[in-house]
Length: 232
Image (cartoon, rainbow, N blue to C red; front, side, top):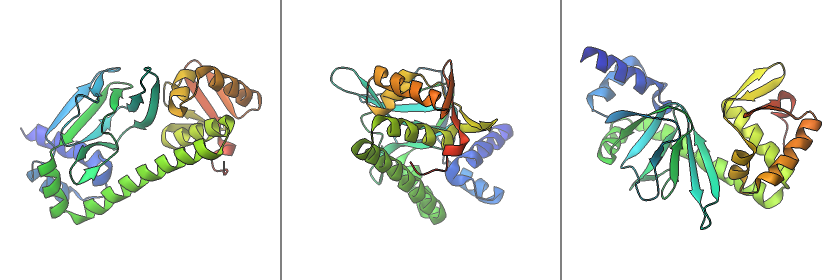
């Protein structure tokens, strides 16, 4: 039991909205029985579908999840990639934009959850966490707004560069002047993120390789670090 409590506190401390709290504060939160359960999800397995929405809120502890929708013809449109510390779910007092969507593990992923009642108790007892959560929601909305702006005002090349730049900032590691994106990105996956055809993306990617903007290999992409802080 003691080891379980230590492990639970460790996991709690790694969730982004808890990361600035002291160990004593973490112990107080643990006494609230906040986190209900932990669940390892194998790669390519659905965490939820539009017909099987999880109750409460969930956190990604380790691994990566893909959030996407399907249109009437079955074409996939990727809404976001969730990783360490990211949240998803819907409750009466908070929506994280993951209702009626598919959530799928891109790799073995550890997910933990909190019920609506437990969440409400936690926000009342810890207003500082509520403020951090507002920041998380604000960042999610900003990201969606940027996606809409790209679709409305930019051509496909600019949209691809913006998408790769955003992924680099979240999942990139600089190696020899290029940001290696830690995701299994295929041309089809990029097309799913942008709502276009794979053929169109392949044409743009070839041009970006030729211009030295990116380097590619099997399911991996490196973005020239020189463009990462440049306005798109």
